[in-house]
Image (cartoon, rainbow, N blue to C red; front, side):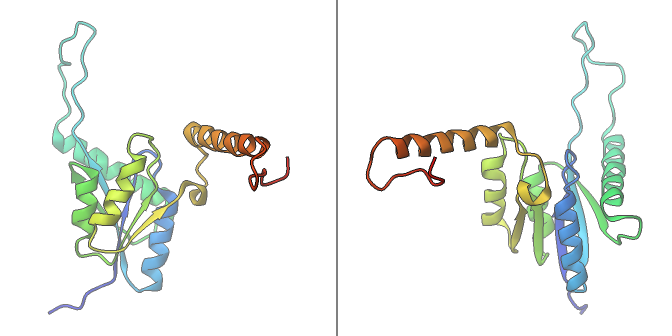
Length: 180
């Protein structure tokens, strides 16, 4: 029977390359004498339509799409961690949520960047935290140095406007935090 090696699974986004999550996962594996599995889920792209509305003559095969996913993941990990990273690269066809949960089934830790899209942000990380069989670390955007989205800027502005309005409404105990 082989001894269990400490394993950190990190989800690597095709949009951002998840640099903070990759670095943090790599450091955790190093500290615990373990390994890192960098995971990316992929889908076969829909065939592009021509201007006439018909399907293009050349449709990429799933093998080509998988090779492209592997090469992009390898390039992203290389760019973030350098050439001697020792990270296991794994691509999985299908849903990223399911792929991360399956990869983390035997892992000690799952690391992801906070989702950047407004559509998936509220539930993606939350669902992983409650469904994973190991601890989940979610790197917030402000830690990773990601620029704040327009949605977050608007929400912050609306929140501060509400606080200022409440503070100026003459209600006892509600003043503005900074006295303005």
